[in-house]
Image (cartoon, rainbow, N blue to C red):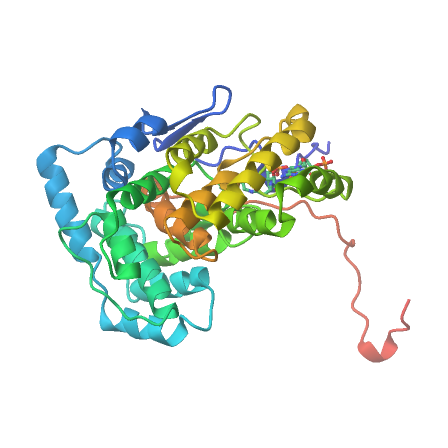
Length: 380
Ligand code: ACO
């Protein structure tokens, strides 16, 4: 008897592992990291504390946090091999690809499978931040600035990029964005990391797999795509016609839709609340993108909400990224810096009971047939 076989395209609805890291309550629109509402973490915690939370599934005591920060700060310093690689490639490749290259370099000689390798996990998060800032700095004609031990992770990120200690406001916005993107279950990038890790590849190479899965516009690349989309629409007046045309051509509106949320993405609400605090201080470009995005949200929802397609976090984040001075081609890379916290935590968690990830495909090709030598083939 032939059993009916189900194929789950895109692994939609398939549970591939257990995890204690995050809970997406997609009915009520709440995201929890190890039991903490991400909204509360954004309001009261820091990215650094969230990295600890991800790795240990609990918040640190103050002495643990002091030790943790020492390790993180030390690990933020780059070595000559990183700096030379950045100098060589920053001008010739996109930021995300170079991040992947550098993290692979960091993994040279390392082996995978150690679920207690917290130091490597912290080192990966720290290095990603410094890689990000230094790539951007070198691209704009500057050179490596070592991190300062008296600055927080987001402060150092902006300091190493710009050469100036950022304002409290900008550092706080960046901290919020880093927290918001730190973890989100098993999207394509985290799954890619887990697939690599499940072969017992090293931690850093597994992160590289995650980084590269962020590149496309359907996942990590959506914020850059959504920003470019707003600029190409050009004005608020053109939004209604643009939405109608885009949907009639069966194209997607970037920054809308989500595999898990069929309601408004709670992270988008948090981002919008942060934006509201800065309405008075936006420059003209950011203000224009803000107005277009607002109209896009209104008209997009009008047509798509009935199908469970709502704005996601990436519709709104470009406004904050630009507001704190990030280049328009660096948004996805910043996402990678933040999500490294989630990737490393998932990888260590998975290695506790590692199982090679090896799904199946349902074969629909030719039946077995004979090989005909080239000279005897007739072409039909
Ligand atoms: N605009 C218009 N139509 C959409 C959109 C959208 N943004 N998203 C989904 N749809 C439509 C599809 O065209 C499709 O229509 P059809 O049934 O008539 O063919 C239907 O909804 C299902 O779409 P899928 O892409 O198969 O649904 P899925 O659950 O895989 O979608 C996804 C999730 C890929 C994120 C999708 O909504 C999308 O492409 N959005 C735009 C890109 C984006 O913003 N991605 C960021 C997601 S958040 C993150 O990764 C951080």
